Length: 129
Image (cartoon, rainbow, N blue to C red; front, side, top):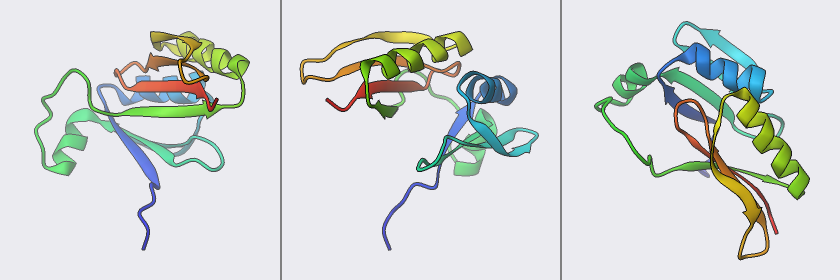
């Protein structure tokens, strides 16, 4: 059996705010919607995104809800062009994201930037080359 990611779960401070960001702002579609939890489709060929109340998610995993700073993870959206990268970055900002690193030409030949969602999760938006 191979390890495949079916859903990415984010613990968030405000499920409604996160839903608004990802659905209204970024164009995801809601697949399940319950108090304190929602599952969204990120699009064909991608894992789903689950958003769950922060403390409930910590309790579900059996860990403390305390934590801050870099979470040791980021999500990467690889696109075909610099224009597409700029478009996604702009869309994210319009939806309430904060630019962490402006999109610029990278040393390795690509083009990339980072934004953080309203809960501080990092998204890298880049071209493959």
